[in-house]
Image 1: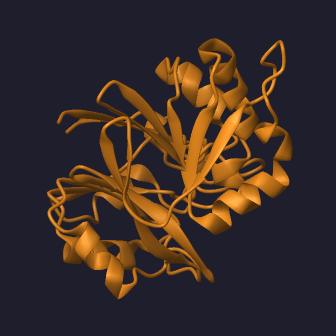
Image 2: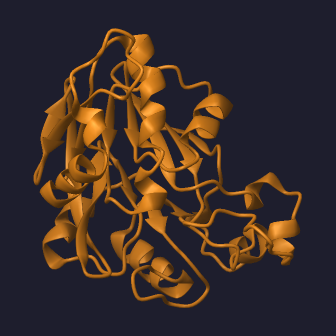
Length: 254
């Protein structure tokens, strides 16, 4: 099974550059320091599977030429991972079909409460997102593809990372429960949270991300969900050979 992975956004909740900031990262003209909010696209078996719908979804879709979304895998309902949900209406309009969304029951319930209009029947003009809520807590199949949620801890919440084949995407994590470690064995590619240079209550810092990446032992790890505290070249110089800094537009064939 061949997969195409695109890192749509590698940034944290504020994005980089941050409004009003004059630090070296925010002033950098290197595109790898210009980070939209965290999201990813996995293309497999003829499907486009979107991970999260952050506030920059429209710009990411235009940048990467995304014309179809077959399903959305939600990690959790924080604004920087969810609040671009209205931009799914463009895909519903063109596809004339509801888009299934997956997440743990807490996440799906939160989305249904906050964005109730997305779950109404389609109108004549398909001018709203039309979504099909599908809460999941274990592995499931969609379009012949097995998708495995990976429970991880984000602050006080238990949220989802996701594994498809030998690639896993884990954002917003400060601890990995014992029961989730077997789900992370044998990975070729790992995308892993790394918020700041120092630890943070609900995210890995650099040292924690490196330690967990080495313990997981994927063939290659890319760090994601970074603030302006982490400049691309400075961080890359600190990393072991099989760990790299992710960036918007990173494209992988697995």
